[in-house]
Length: 405
Ligand code: SF4
Image (cartoon, rainbow, N blue to C red; front, top):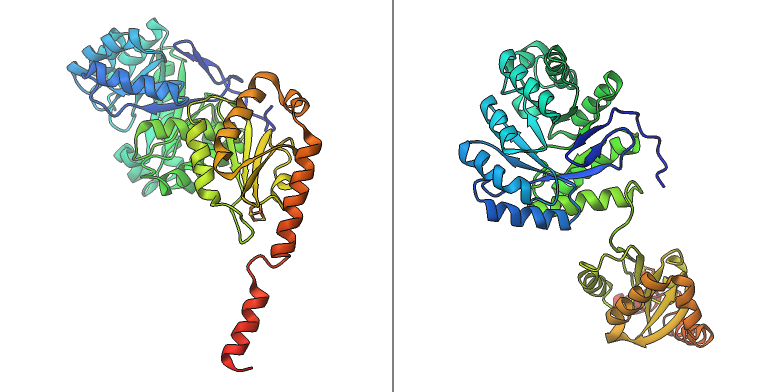
């Protein structure tokens, strides 16, 4: 199903979830609760899993957090990674708590004996570690060596850490080289993909609040995915982490890298021909399908003149015309409903298609009648609006009259 050749990488396991080596690309996110708040954190983890998150990271910044992890891990529906900064002992505590993996920042755990102690323990427990290089917290000596933050500096930081891991024969590694600058992050991952076959975790760090954050993260992550680079992804948004998980999942589905689980709602941008408020109907349809888990493409089109033709690839769609909604399945008109029942009708037909398929939906419909009705409304609209939906010609006549020409 995916059209791009993926880079060959080693495969590691994070709990029961494979990463790399041809496994489906996974979606990650991070909880924003205090990890010591066991119930609050689990609630967020369940919401993340429902939104499409495959692996979740929780901070392990003190002993209370580590003790919280001991209670969270056995009850979590998805594998848990402990996020470690500065204190290598927290990595040891998190492993004791039973986490499925660790994230270490080589920029702030720098003593070789500490790094090797953690890697040896992870080796004995068969746990994966992500080397999470972050542009904002690069080892100061590399900053100096490269005269600032560069892609080469970030890659060297990761390779340096790998060398310590290899000394203790530890190989269950993932790497990320995140920066908030998109071109820099893309360059760093490309360099890394040339240098190693270790699986890569993609992300644009500190992307910020949506929509700008979504755009930055999507620009960086999808550029690399389309080059076949990347085994697991995270959107770092200043937002509810559920939005991160949803965005990650939607990106992978849009690129054909994961099986579709949810409705793919397509809608026309609307124009002067629109017979309905397309934005309102599309948003109501989006809300109606949000939790339905129907892997269908569904179109909301503003007019019956162009809508059914332009969305003929969709499994199901609706186009407005003459105060009515024209339902179509794979471009075939199947029913006509009153305008205020459009969303309900979409849901009913979508559920039928999900269960019985598009052919059965076409077979159950009186397509001849629906096509005749659609043709009637189409020609009514053409007569009424013609090619000049915005009445520009009439306005020009009026303008000329007004200015006396
Ligand atoms: S489907 Fe109709 S309303 Fe929507 S953009 Fe196309 S012409 Fe305009």
